[in-house]
Image 1 (cartoon, rainbow, N blue to C red):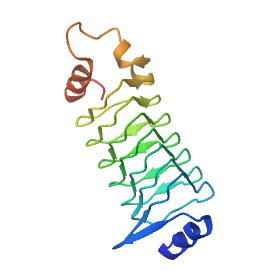
Image 2: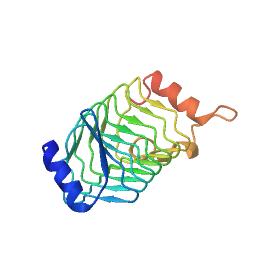
Image 3: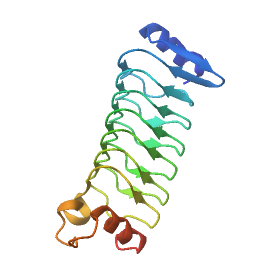
Length: 188
C-alpha cells in the first residue's frame, strides 16, 4: 500500500494523523478499526488513544510502531519484519504468526499472545508487563530473553505455565531460572 493510499483510508475513516518526516503518525482519540486492510504502509506509528484492529493484515512492514493506549489485534498476521515495536497500553494478539524474527520488541503494558508460533529467533526479548503465551513453540534458541512482568506459557515444551512447572527449584526466581535454562540450551 502506498503512502497516499493509506492516508486516503485514514481520511475516509475520519482518523486524525500527523506527518513526521517519512512517518504517518495516527493520533486519533479513539479506536482504530482497519479490519479490511490486508496491507499498510511502512513507517506507520499508531499513537491513538484506543486499540488498533488490523484483523485482515497478513504482513507488518518494517518501521511500524504500536504506541497506542489500548491493545493491538493482528490475528491474521503471517509475517512480521525486524524493527516492529509494540509499546502499546494493552495486549498484543498475533495468533497466526508462525515465525518471530530478531529485533521485534515487545514493550507493551499487558500480555502477548503468540499461540501459533513455532519458531523464535535469537535476539527476541519480551519486556512486556504481562504474560507471554507460546502455545505451539517447540524450542527456544540461545539469546531469547524473558523480562516480562507475568508468567510464560510453554504449552508444547512443558505442558503449561512455567511458574507451575514441577522442575522449578524452591527459592530461585522462576524467570531467572527460565532465562538460565535458555542460555544453557535446555530448550533447543
